[in-house]
Structure formats: structure tokens, C-alpha cells
Image 1 (tube, helix red, strand yellow):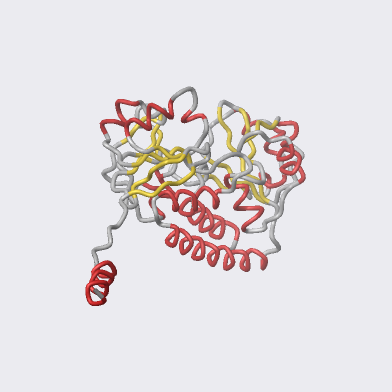
Image 2 (spheres, rainbow, N blue to C red):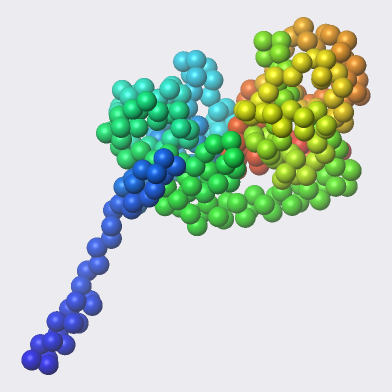
Length: 297
């Protein structure tokens, strides 16, 4: 009997251990989602930066206007990945045959959409919102695809780059900077706690003009419309102009041409192929390189 018991225990200990193919996670909306432990076909519209940084090539990529608007700064990493409209039509999502769908906003799954997407594949809404940092979103994406360790390594590498850039920028006196986007002859200013504003003022610790502080206090989105009269008083040493309408009448107005940074030719322009209107470790890494190139002579 003793020998039999010993054999039973030995067999139990040495038996084949089954590895679970799913793991249950709680998403932003408090949904309990059974996620594949090793997803192979991921859809993460507008989360492509995070996925690529984690070593995952999504099965489709975000686009607008029939493919005319895409994340061009990820062109190399997303080569060959078909486009999908930002509204994520159910038919197109089904055709992509995902085994995991990541959503980056509450609106993307509102009005019964969550249930529809969840019928196609496990659907997980990552942490997001005006008070949620890009780092928090990135690490939640990493958790959802079972790459938390990789995500942490990415952030360590990013932080080392930030430290190096910060030291260089201190040598030139940490100038005051502002980011503007001009479209339909209207100027929009990025706030200081999201998008490129988070990078410039928090990570790189560049100077924040008083107008940026004023706009940021009441900002309800990444970009806020600012009148030309207010812009005329912008106390910025340098202005980053992103994806802006060329030849806009605003640029011919004396209020614009008399802005100190404009008069001193401290105006740096980036087209729609740059990463300035996006967020994520890859976007911010590229932005740091551009800031250093333009400001550190």
C-alpha cells in the first residue's frame, strides 16, 4: 500500500501540466474578458504604435478618408498591413479574422457596439481618458497581449532617451515652446498634459508659455482653438507647427508675423507624415529626435 501511494504521488507530480490558452482580464469598462494568452491576429485601431513597440504586427491598420489618412510615421513597421476605416465596420473586422480586438476609447464600444465586436473576437477596452497617461494605456495594451515584461523594457529604454535629451536641452536654457496646428484657417494649441504637450513639458521639461497654461486649464481635448488675438501675445521662444494648412490666410496676418518666435524664424514645421499628432513610445521617440535636431544646434 505504501509503495502504491508513493507511485500515485510520483505520477501526479510528474504528469503533463496543461498550459491555459486563455487568461481573464478586467478591462476599462469592468468587463471580464477571456483573452488568448498568445494572440496571433490583433486589431488595435489607433493603438498600432503600442502594438508595434511590443513586437506585434496588427492584422489591419487605422485609416480615414478611404485610406488617405494613415499613421505614416509607422509606414515601415506596418508595410503590407491592409487598411481599415477608423469606424471599424463590423464586416471589415470580421473579414480580418482577429483573435483579439483592442479598443482605445469608450465611444468605440458605445451603443451596443461592444456586444457586436465581442461576437467576432474577445474585445478588450484598454485604459484611456483625459486623465489617463499614454504610459498607462501602453502598459494596459502590453498586459492584454501578455507582454508586460516587454512593455516595461520599452519604457526603461524610452526613459533613458528622455534623460539624455533633457540634459542636452538644459544646456540651451530649456526654451519655452508651443505646438500649433492650423487647419481651416484656425489655430489649435496642444494642452500641457496630453499628446505632444505631455512629452515637451513633462518628459523633456521644456518651458511652458503662459498662454499654453491658460489654454490647458480649460482644455477638454488634446487640441484647443485659440484666437489670433491671443496668439499674438504668445511668449514662446520656439513654435512647432504640425500638419498645418499651407498658404492659410492666418499666416499672412500681421498679428501672426509679429509673434516673437515667428519674427526670429524660430518656427519649425512638420508635415502629416510625422508623428506629432500621435502618441506612444515610437511617436514620442521620433518627436524627441526632431526636437533635439531643431533646438540643439
